[in-house]
Image 1 (cartoon, rainbow, N blue to C red):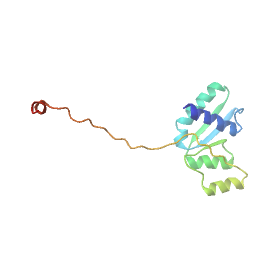
Image 2: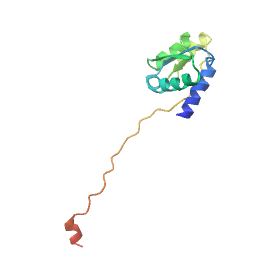
Image 3: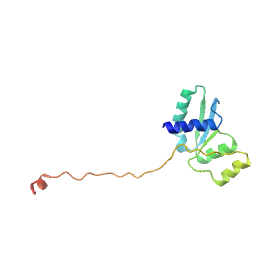
Image 4: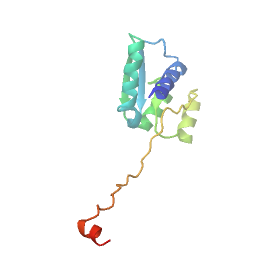
Length: 125
């Protein structure tokens, strides 16, 4: 959690919002549903007076918000498409991707211990 928190501080600094009273973050549900709000609370504890407007509405929304200037940070759980990068460049926006976490799914297997020896199997020895 500490490494991700430091990454959020880095992102805030890159967005030029470390001194801002209000920081708008839009995008990925994966990040915005739980992780970013928790990190924002930690940041606010150390920087009273800072408020966060967090909208977890999907990666496409986060990238679009950066392009149209309605957010300082756009959360995305995917890379920007070439068309999105082109739209940003056309508006003079230089997107800087910063990885703050990795998301994944892992299979889970249930390990079943071998059956305990029965009384008859012990007597047969």
